[in-house]
Image (cartoon, rainbow, N blue to C red):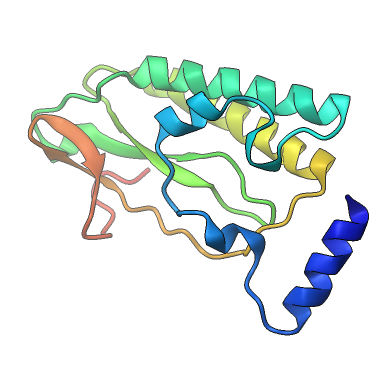
Length: 157
């Protein structure tokens, strides 16, 4: 694994972009759940395999808590930073509704998921492309909170 990382670093030193650039920035949560533990290079050691499994379970709890983020106005829509990239910042954002989701519980689960993803990144020696991912915020469209396609930050927290 370390030899592979060194080869990747050597290749990147000559101008390539990090390995994550080949992956889409926004991955559906359903795809993450279907992939399960060990997907996308997760695992590798017994400890490394246990960490993604814990993170997957926490992500499922977050998604169950958020459910369908129904709303009647933009003021009810917010975004939650999810996960942790290897060189810092969140992996993605999740739109949620304060109309039906307890914020304190969601924030606590979000912090737990972030810690689990950081631990997995450290255990597996992961790398990322260090691209800044701004919070898109969330808006109410057709009665459901969705990421703000315009990129502004209404509802961002």
